[in-house]
Length: 418
Ligand SMILES: Cc1cc2nc3c(=O)[nH]c(=O)nc-3n(C[C@H](O)[C@H](O)[C@H](O)COP(=O)(O)OP(=O)(O)OC[C@H]3O[C@@H](n4cnc5c(N)ncnc54)[C@H](O)[C@@H]3O)c2cc1C
Image 1 (cartoon, helix red, strand yellow):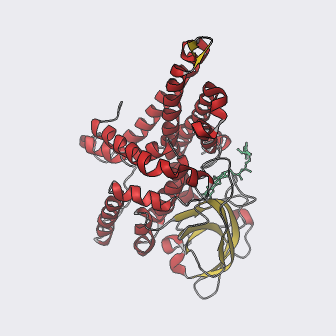
Image 2: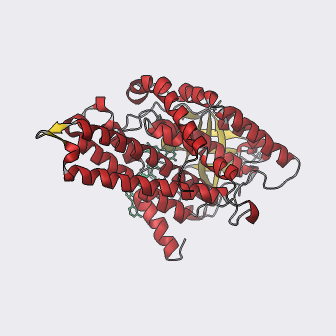
Image 3: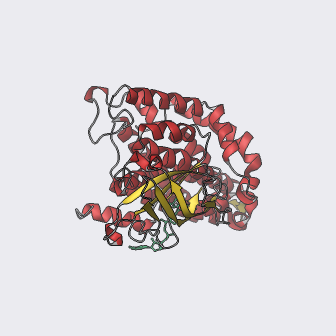
């Protein structure tokens, strides 16, 4: 794939119009005044039929699973599904479509993508990939259609990059087939508003050292006794994505909330699949940010006159613009590669997804920072919105694994230690 198809471009244009009319007018309320993003996102889902498509897709997958077709919910394998159907346009389209809202929303408010992606992709995706059939039916449909808001909680005050090693949250068997959950989670996207929460913790077992303890996860509902959801934090950027803490104090759950209904249901490998999915999504976000920063910079540089000439006539400014275009092309190519990989029925490896995220996040930060520079003092003012792109870009280097952790993942793979 070397370019967007006409149809994809048309859909992107329609989404851009929708965002301009329906989202831009609320941008200050979303970014700075705590307006939760969910109703606006639901409006977007309804306008583009994303909710109906997700619902129909879900129903088809469940019908196949109920008919006993194993793996109906596992679209990807490490090998091409069918050599003759490689790169059929409809397969490319199916792989590309979910990225279009991500790219378009990221041009204006990457926080909205964060809130949506964590709810639909991470929380809904984790349940679809590792939940039991009953759990899929009970929890996932409403997440995939965005009727309900989801949160996916692994990070704790003392365990971030070392997510598993330093994890303190626990599940203890209650002796009656259920579990008692305790722990604090922090920096949780949608934490303050989530209806459904995937809570990842250690299984307390006698005679085991902390590092040997199994990682398990549970699907929780908001309002369960002992579960508290904090108010949103104030943040540097992505204000449209509410982030908060979760406090669990002796939350009693039955075994049907244990992911996969098995203590081997969703441990380290399940979480790693989720890491890989979210890292690929970050590149699509970076593409939206970089596209917008470049467009704004080109427009401003052409009309801003200093020393009697538009600043675009100065080579120092041209160098910045040219580097932005190089970054845009590189990120777009990574996104196209991801689309082709998915269209072939394959997944990126964790190291590939990490490389894609590392490059895209760093490029987005550099490009948006240079965009502010091109705008000069005006770039430092909120009204031009270019400073928001820069603040928002920074998160791409931190969440879904920091830049440093992407480097560790790539190096481990290169050295055969993954
Ligand atoms: C806005 C936002 C939303 C988030 N959403 C979610 C969410 O929905 N769910 C969730 O579970 N988490 C979420 N997170 C948490 C996020 O994934 C973590 O913040 C991130 O993984 C980094 O962990 P930390 O903040 O504890 O930093 P630390 O792990 O303490 O890292 C601090 C610094 O040390 C570096 N460092 C750490 N270890 C090494 C090493 N071995 N080698 C070199 N450098 C190292 C890091 O790269 C970083 O620069 C979110 C965070 C933010 C800011």
